[in-house]
Structure formats: C-alpha cells, structure tokens
Image (cartoon, rainbow, N blue to C red; front, side, top):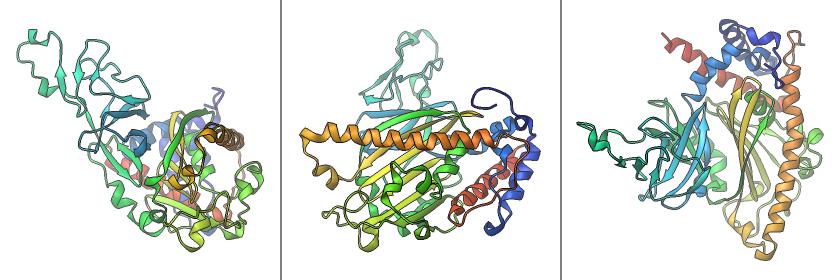
Length: 399
C-alpha cells in the first residue's frame, strides 16, 4: 500500500524474495553497496515478518527517564500494537507492563502520562499497585479459588540507558541495552551526560511512508545543506567534516564539528563535561531498530518510530536541554523561548516530511535505477546489515 491506500506492484513481493534481496544487499561491501531494496519498504509479507523479528523482539525506546522522575509517574506507549505502561517505583526504578487489565484486557491507563498511587480499571474496578500487583477485585470472592496474586499485570523487560527508557516485548531479550551500547557510551556519547538533559517537549506525528524511510533519512546528513536551509543547515558543518562511526550490530552514528565555538550548537561556559572539539560537536546516532537522536552540547532531539501500516508510521519525538542552558532563560521569557523552539522543530520536521514521503512514493516503482551511497551515508548500510541480521535470524528460529 502507498500512503494514500493504493496498491503498489511491490506490495505482493514474497517474503522469500525480499529476504534474498535484503541478504544480497547486506553482503555487499560499503564502497560498492546499493540502497535498501525497495521491496523491503513495500512488501506486505515482509512487514508481517519484521513485526515479529524486530518490534516483538528488540529494545524499543519509549521516552526519557526524567519524564517519569517521581514515584507514581507513568507514561504509556505502543509497540507493535502492544500497549505499554511504564511506571516509576517507590524503589526509584522503573517497571514496564502491558497496559491491559488482567481481567478481560481492557486498556488500563488511557492517558499518555500522569501520576498515580494505584491503577483502577474503568470496567470492573480491578485495582493494581505501582508494582503491577492486583490489590482489589470487587466481588471476585464469589469465584472459588480466586487468588489475587495470580492476576497481576503482565511484566515487560525495561532498561534505562543514558537517560532513555527502553522496553522489550521479548520473553528473553537477546542482549541488554547497557551491554550492547557500552562502546557507543564509552567512546562517543557518554561525555555529554545525556541523562542530565531536561525534557521540555514530547510530541507525536503520523506520516505517509514506511517507518524505515525515516530511519534512512535521519541516519544521513548528506541532505542537510540542501533540505534544511531554515534549520540544521544554519550550523554550517561542511560535508567533508562528517565522520561515520565504527560498524556495530546495535547502533550507527556520525558526527561533525560546527564552525562557531559559541552560540547555538556549542557548549555553555558552565558546561564542565565536554572538552576540546567536543564542545561544539554534533552527533547523530541510531540505536537499532528505531531510536534516533541528534545530540549537541546544548540540545538533544530524539525520535522513536513505530509502523502503523506498510505506508504509515507514528514517530514520537521529544527535545531535551542541558540544565546550564535552561538556567540562563529568565522565567518570564521561558514560554516565548519554548514556543520559538517548537516552531523551529515543526519547521525541521516539515522539511523532512516531504523527503521521507518522497522516498516511499518513489521507491514504490517496480522499475528503478541501481542506486548508490555517498561516502557519509555509511550508517544506512549499517542499518541494512542490522535489518538483514535480525530478519534472517528469525527465519532460522521459526518452525
């Protein structure tokens, strides 16, 4: 399907064909590699396969830890049609649950975020504590042998990494977020201390494209000087200055130093975390499969992408700012500053929306050129290799 609901010739591509095309693409060395096979973004059978291989198995970012900082704070998200509830515990840790009552599965918490002491289902008033234990089930004493301890909320795996909250639907995740991303933390992003950045906005948007089209767009900055003239191009980072990071099974990144040592994109004088060129460094990274981050000394933008169909996705995004930057904004000017930043982000998203939907529309054709990569598009090739690895692995494990 296309974004407008019309069938495309590639929609009926078989899973076996798409997997073979994906494997052929992933086996190429970067210098001779071609872009992601078009059918990977259009095949209905592959979409069903990647739901199980990717979104039901991998770690998915649902937000930031500071959004639910105090006991009882919660947020809800959705991963591959599974409603997720994440709650701050009295111990200070986080628990994640399927956001469905253990009685007959009504959605338990309808609000996107909030604060609670207990969660009560609107249907039959079954009530759960913050740890997901059933503490009240009206009239269930009428059922012989009913034991509240056997009817708690379904737990999900949850981890915090560098201020981000990840949830996995897998019964037993293949790895932990912390161990998988340790090289990225130690060598690149750890010096920024992203966890200290304060989240100031959280939004969502729905676009008419495949979810992987946004991954493609975000993981390369080749388009920035041409497509983001109203926003990110103003930082004036020459393409020659971009450096793509090491190959990894779990992430990809590139970075570049901006010209100006002060102003937007540079570290505040009170920032004691960063030194040398890192005080004006931008890092774009993707934690596979669907967590995208632009990180700078004075700014963090993250996106978590979820498919809602073959040609439709929802992107939940947020902005976080270091405390020393926020401290310089007078309280009387904060709302104006926030409104201007919101407008800036809307402009950047509008610039990208046109490109991402064009990727989906153009690649729907059964007749396409061979395609190629620019040298600073290595992260796209890394993503193709990741996608191939997890999708082929799922075939092997399937009965």
